[in-house]
Length: 536
Image (cartoon, rainbow, N blue to C red; front, side, top):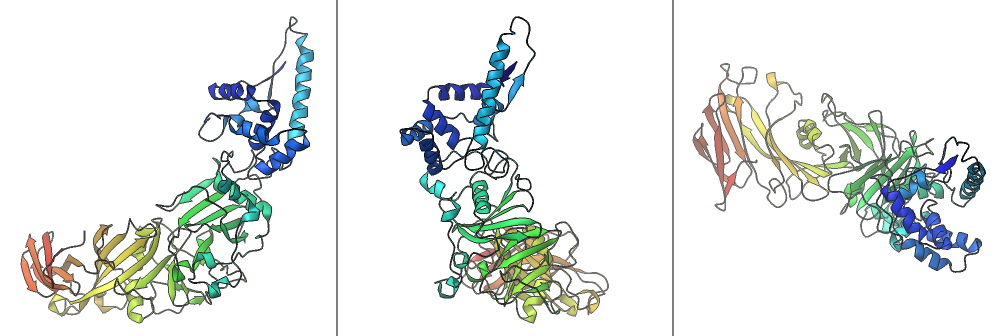
């Protein structure tokens, strides 16, 4: 005995709603729902089937209130509505007459299933990302703009030379590159998954980045094979979206979708995006205006960079990246012309700069490279935070007590694409032990989440630390004497220490004898009389 599978309350409610439709209305519902045809394709199929008023059939189907179903699929995808999913049960002698009916029902089900498989768009086969076996979830939107965002024929692309005459060089000026830019089926899958990622799709978004569908047809930046994945890069004016599927994963397995906010990106902020990431390496897609690319190690400020090969599409070869949790023995960065970019585990690399907050510049001079060599390991705390740029500012250089050389005070501020969520930390970089010239990491002494310190709105800072003089330093105290050191930016005119250590100085440097474990509160006065506290 064959019978359809039974469902739950949602399936029963949907069955009752469908029973109120006319036959053309139910057909339209099936075409636009399980079959995932566009409105135009559904109209053509209905007309070919002899439906007199195809528009009314679509309108009737659109009025159906579909129950929510489970969190990952619609009730219409359940086994109860699958004409190929029937239950077989043994019959008894009393119901032997029902065998004939069961055979007829099974035959009708086979005919209906065969008809569905023969419809345009691949039917229910697993070949397409927007089929039931693919990576996209069922469609619900009938909005014209949302429908246009699903049409690969409406994807926009900038001209190959548009960037040369564009008012500003940003992602909107990037041409479409890659050997798959004309692959309509690939673009259709990518757009469908972007609009409706299924439960098997790994979706990642940087903080503050919306992971929803495009408001209209997006711009195509790249489509091609990167390592062992097929990658499509889109830009919708606010976000860079990276779709990737396994090169042999036509069933939707291994599909990923990454979102990164990029509003306001221009010039060097739009120099590159991450096209692929595998085995501790990344491959960048560089902007059309980038003429050269070099791999540098931030921890080796005096070492020459290594030329990174790029193909005709601007895609680099594998570039090593710092591994999370690993010992900081190297920090790779990509130099594009005079600018420096580093991967922070996001689709868009962060730009590194050096200098005063209101006029940060490229990390080009020897002093800038040295400061960044002792700061780079601090970047590990910024992974996955949606960081757009990181600036290091050497705000003071303080002579150390006892002729132990001088310490460099650095304030490093990370800005995010979303504006909020910035991170600032101050550090002291003291001479290497024994007078060695090695670029040992600086010691972070304060940190602030958010706020305006060390940024263009408030280019000032005060920081302090307990420092122990050692005999291994030039002129250091062999008895290991402790000091409270403090320094402020140029606007500071005096510094006062209270609490466990007391002291005051005119100017922007303070050095007061202290004991291990002492705690002190530091305040400073600015030239305009305003009070300044330490970074926190």
